Image (cartoon, rainbow, N blue to C red; front, side, top):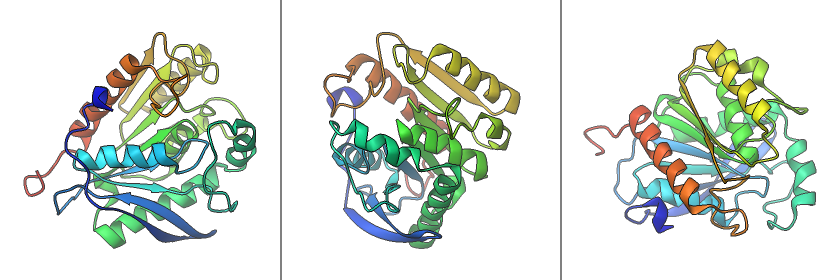
Length: 253
């Protein structure tokens, strides 16, 4: 974790529950150590649930001063987490979560932040990883007023049963994309299509392709896929993006 310069430790962590149109949804919450956080990041899970790695990402964000929450997007299935060896089991679970379900859940997470923590959408960014990258992009096309969206290697945005490039015109906040050059789930043609859709939407966007990196290159819980150099670069760009579009206020700095 040192290569990502996490800074001081996060504060309190806990699980809470939010209501959605499809039933209750658990939410992992990591608070900054200092009280009075007025900016938040919704962390959207990989294909394996709100596992130790996603919780660690939330704590990393909290250590930087963001109140971080990770909603359990598997709440409809009764599955909480899967191991990284259960790729075959994960695929039908994420395949069943289409745009409407994603938007329902992220909207519920935003309501939770406003009601429980007093943080509005305008002081909230989305950050998604793997399946969560697709989820973050999808939600951002339908939920106006966000501070920004970060998608780490999100397959399925440009192709597949839940592709949402035709919705890119609904984006209202800046977008940051991280993709590994050797990621077979997001080939160069799809990266180009996403960039073209973002350009047509006139949304501020930044897209980076990392050489010698494949899928999940920033996931340090998967040593066979983790690439420290590209991961550190992607995280630094993420910190810069969040610092620009979701800066600390004078009272919370």
